[in-house]
Image 1 (cartoon, rainbow, N blue to C red):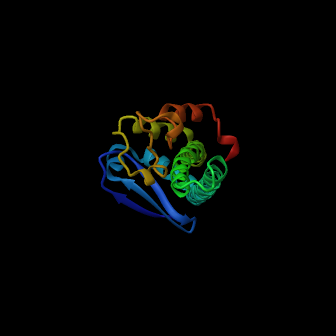
Image 2 (image 1 turned 90 degrees about the vertical axis):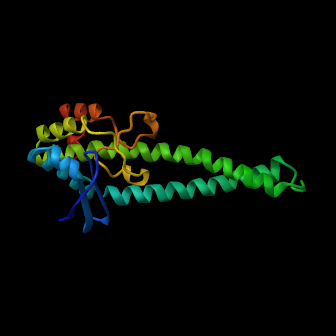
Image 3 (image 1 turned 45 degrees about the horizontal axis):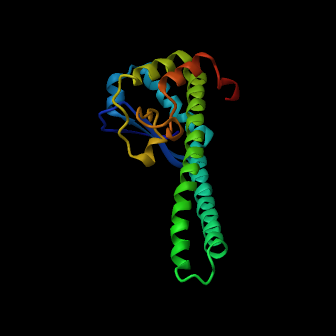
Length: 198
């Protein structure tokens, strides 16, 4: 069983952390406990248990690590190519060209890596919702998601937001969102879109 913790927050939220299934923690905001009924809280906890069962924390960390390694490796490779072959290797400022092109390429490839990570993060939210629906009932999970609509926008730190149940940010482009909209998540539950893969 994961450890359960309550933390102070002005928005309804919950998140899971831990490096494996046997060492995990579910943290729930006091605002969520104050505004949701027992069934909805049960659904939220089941959602977080879904993340633990699917190993989402470890998978996200590994994915980020692998993509970051590729970003650095590919950026350095192309920066060397630019500095040695496009510009003359004897050029006086060759090392400056290498560092400038390396920095620019790291930013470009870093954005592409973020898009991949956020896409994966959105998918795992759908699966965690479906897991909760299977564990406690679709109606309870839908009710919890509807209740989240009245909450303030999530104010958790960026590194933590992907692990929260409510991480949708209104003014962020879809490609860079860690969470689907609550409406999309509710619709997916009504359609049983991800339940066959649980």
